[in-house]
Image (tube, rainbow, N blue to C red; front, side, top):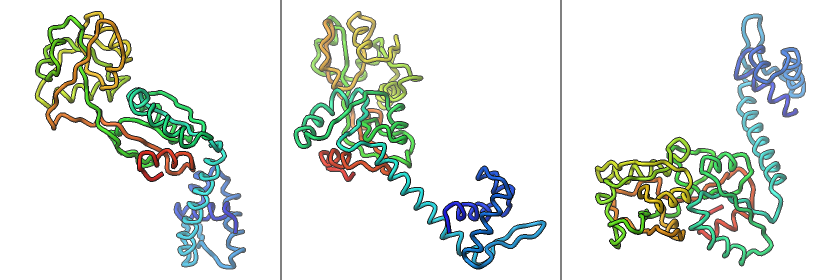
Length: 297
């Protein structure tokens, strides 16, 4: 009994039609029929009833169909496991991170990890979350530090880590720059520099939801994609910006950063940060890194 025979039989048992089953497996119907006959001969019992008009499973065929499905799923899982191990060289951890994680969270974690495991090389790739998630699925990254997915990602594991707090970036001569802490009601009338939604949906929506949570609408004056560009536009007096708190570490002449006071309700998911990974891909180094976060790997 071979896997290709089980695969051929299961396709016929599910389709109840040799032509459709052959098309599903990209085989000729004659080749498909031969694999089923070989399986029946190996087991010593008919698995299908064939007439000129229909195909039906025998009681033995019904019993085998469930077992065949489980066997093929287990074989596929074993193949994914081995391919994942082959694609992931030992002693290396590949991490993808959005800018907030790469600048704010990961430097300290990477230092702790390298001190605890000096023999493991880490490779950090900074990218948008929309680029990191496909690389996790494809096995090209082992961990991804991203915003919480707004829709379920059933093939990936995700753990929420922290809630970021926004800061307002203001021209240093702006009247509000003299304040130690700002409210959204004070910022809403100001010209706002915002990432475009088509390329930075999380960043764009996160800012818009902050204002919406308190019943306000900002006055968008300019769009810019990169945070460094946004801060430079603030320095030029084009407007203000709301950015993750790590951005306050940027030292740009003519710009000051002030914390923003938020009501508890104004904490949309776009300001959260978490870690995602592909649980089907074997990676012992990933488990070691997750242990720093007290997460199962």
